[in-house]
Length: 286
Image 1 (tube, helix red, strand yellow):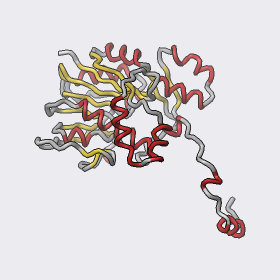
Image 2 (cartoon, helix red, strand yellow):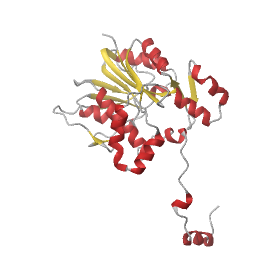
Image 3 (cartoon, helix red, strand yellow):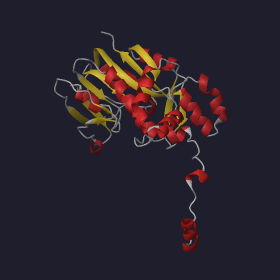
Image 4 (spheres, rainbow, N blue to C red):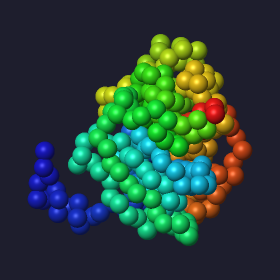
């Protein structure tokens, strides 16, 4: 129903102040994580952390990388700037990423290097089926942005990642954690499912957009990587700081983003029940 002109006029004549309206209600886990809107305070922080983590993970020597992380992943510019050639997997040709960026996540600049930037090659393909690539074709595989949580047969996807890696090659993956799955189940009033979630061998959780996500503990992720023939280097939460903490601090001081990122990267907490996403690095034996 549209307001009448008289009621609209009264509202305009006596507007409610923000103080009278009170602070906005806290957002739920689904509201935070159902979208990766880079303009919100939390996601600007999140992608800044993710970009720095990727930059620290990238091999020193330029190589050929496969990026399975979907078109909205912001990591490719860092890899290209570091001199790596990147094959990025796309669901459709029109989703190809833009080639150059001077800033990563609108915050930290891409580090300058003496070597020439790498080449970007978009390829239309399915993350669940890498048959189009030869065995041992890549020095590294990046499966960030929850891509393996959306591939419910994660074992098969990891086996394909291991196959296309050269001996000594590495993979960086990011998946949904059980702590996020339990928060989403609680929000949806799925209490019987929630009671079994911590001990479930496979935890599948309805996502707010109607899709299904697979959530992991650090132990489960370790077993899956080992089952694919990969050696785990480390597993840690992507972020330790909560979304509400980040948004409160950035609301208080918008210039605090870089300090928050440094604080996050210095955190030594590695309990998988802290972060909503798990980040893991693994290597293919030589």
